[in-house]
Amino acid sequence: MTTADLHTLTGAYALHALSDRESEEFAHHLSVCPACAQEVRELRETAARLALAAAETPPPDFRERVLAAITETRQLPPLVPESDHRRPSRWRLWRHRLPQLALAACMVIALVAVGVAVDAEQQVSQQRSATATAQQQASKLSQLLVAPDATFHNGRLTGGGSSTVVASAQLGQVAFVYHGLPTLPDSKVYELWYSKGGVMVPAGLVSSSSGSGAKLLDGSPTGAAGVGVTVEPAGGSPRPTTSPILLTALDAT
Amino acid sequence: MHAAAPGERPVGPGPGALETLLDRVSRGDQEAFETVYLTVSGPVLGLVRRLVRDPAQSEEVAQEVLIEVWRCAARFDADKGSAMSWIMTLAHRRAVDRVRSAQASSDREHRVAVRDHTPAYDEVSEQVERRLEREQVRRCLGSLTEIQRESVMLAYYRGCTYQETADLLGAALGTVKTRLRDGLIRLRDCLGVTS
Image (cartoon, rainbow over all chains, first blue to last red):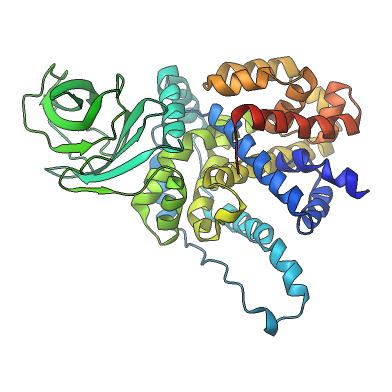
């Protein structure tokens, strides 16, 4: 294959559409063709946008399974290149290929680490129960979290739990990401608010049953100076009836 | 940024937010991993499902990918691209491996050609397009020529090699290679992707 031919393989390589042998050959070519490597980077970023567009809501117990599995999975240390002069000159070439080799090693061991049986029937019913709205939420949330202008504000809630408020003026969206929120009695619910010109505007309810999760705020953050959380009677209130357990300032949007 | 409310700790501006989280994950921070999970689990599962189809197998593969993000967070290299791109590349690679190994064993057993046991392009395309939540992606895919779009979608969402793609589309191998590249380049420019 000529060099000119090789250049045209960036697309097929970025999409894993080459055979293993061709892919290996092309990976080798990448180590000597910085322009090709740059193009592959860009085309992979592009492909990632296709993945974001296909987002789906995972079934409810999926998160628990993943989080349980990571507590039992040892993390790999970073790759630390050793100093060149103590190595044969081939080392330089290999260093270019190391990320790929490391990736392959990561893959193999992860396969061994999983081994979790999946109850197929249960999964099917859970897939059915995932609503279109929830899927849209998941997709929007992913987009928000990687928006170029997204800001993240961590906070602790009075009464327990921690949160991150993620906001993007560009997308006109705000999300409330929470961990370890205490369970409330059935008669109460967490309510989110925008603070607009000194007035608290309802921005949706958060059920406390799961304790951790994320919620996209209802309505537009335009003109909001901040986001607040209160505990309200079930069903929510048009205005806060208790003191906020969290107040977070936002950029002017 | 306005003056921060009491108890609030800004964790930095948008670009690199996921990269910052991965850095914390690489040091064993499980809370940071939970936020990474919230960010990427939807696209990871959605992408794997497009390729693998079977719900139980898809969840298995998606779980492997997410555990791999945890295991290999310290090996993520920001010089080689964004964190989102790294994770989606892992997910796509894993899904493609699963699809091809299943295909290889089924080929050995039944000697069935790809085209006989895979659904028609239109069917797949319709399923994928129905799912595309993101208007911009839909619009930009629409700006590709038909053969560019079909090639990209068969390779990315179906996990076809360029040889299989050429076979399904009845096009020459060289044409498909070129269309995969110029299709993605047009998509890149339309989406304003930078790296």
